[in-house]
Length: 305
Ligand code: GLN
Image (tube, rainbow, N blue to C red; front, side):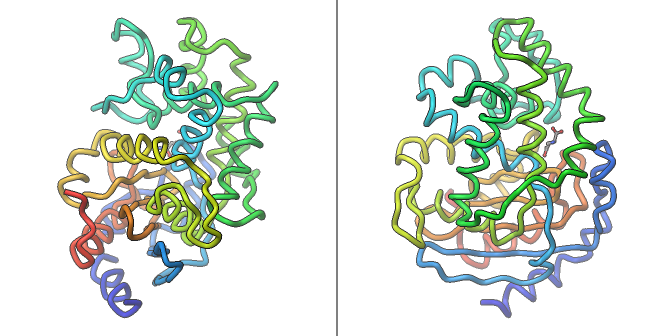
């Protein structure tokens, strides 16, 4: 299969030219837009990969999946979905528009920035650092990698320039949807987005979701079956922001993207897949990465539809 992956990566390299690296977080603008990688980790612990798999990148919005899982563990389904919806959004990932116009003011879903700020606030912990540590520890456990940590250059860059996220968080506080200290929650959110990972880490996290919440390498249950089902459903409908519908048609795997250039995809009962390519399309999703996923999904018959 490595040979097949090599072919797929080479077929899709041309698409990196059609994308742009994220620049609204200045540190991310330093990424090499030519990087492209795919890593697969299946539920029997077989691994296949090709491309720039050793390159580290920041997890960015893929952390929103694990933050949601942690919020569900800490507060349960009812309390979480009182504060954040489960509906797709057709706006940009950092849009503020619908917070004001929707009667309830709650964010549409946990995978847009406003929603992830709410789920971060729901994590147990007396302060932002404790909340951050809880989610980081779950990320480490799901990736089976205790060395995952913050890239402080990216974190500082996000913190310095993250004024749109600040606007979202203060709006949510004003509307009474979050109660804790806004700067503290934002600090946890920025740190979680700045965790540095490899494609293998993300493929392993996805393999836990593919295996109904059980780590394939240890058979330890990390997430309940119900929580896994909820998270996969929201990944399917909201994981690629305002291009989730098109992605469902083309790829058909529950997925989550991040502006660091990675897309985490799950083939239930089969495998976790990570693609990485920092050149992004207009919605903030890896341009070549989504093309690679489309071919991988067709080749291995992974669409859930
Ligand atoms: N840290 C980024 C932000 O808050 C995450 C966005 C993303 O990956 N789509 O803007």
